[in-house]
Length: 121
Image (cartoon, rainbow, N blue to C red; front, side, top):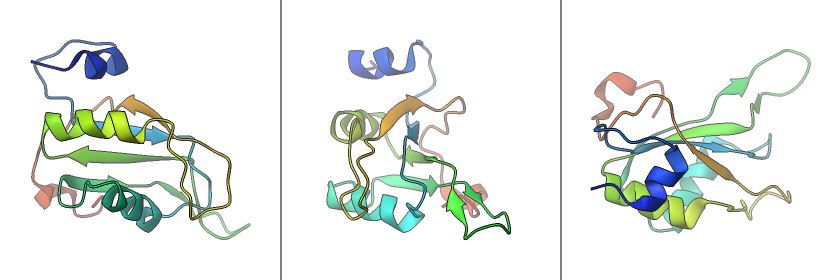
């Protein structure tokens, strides 16, 4: 049974476990390590199976992220706890007033092993 908060966040009902989220409104200088450090600090160490933060590698400037990341969790229960703790979260290490937003990812990876996702983890 899905939590009502998870269903509300995704705006859908499905038999696919809701375990993968897009974290938006990130500071452009945030790195994958910043996201992982925040996840670990908030008690999610070992409970996510990947974290991917797309980057802009244009030559005009240093590589920056595109303002969002994808995080996948091993169970729907852990993902629901993530929604509660990480919505409206601010990365303290970075001097930015931005607060995160969360959306269910279009592609739900539902606790998959990271074997096929080496470039994303």
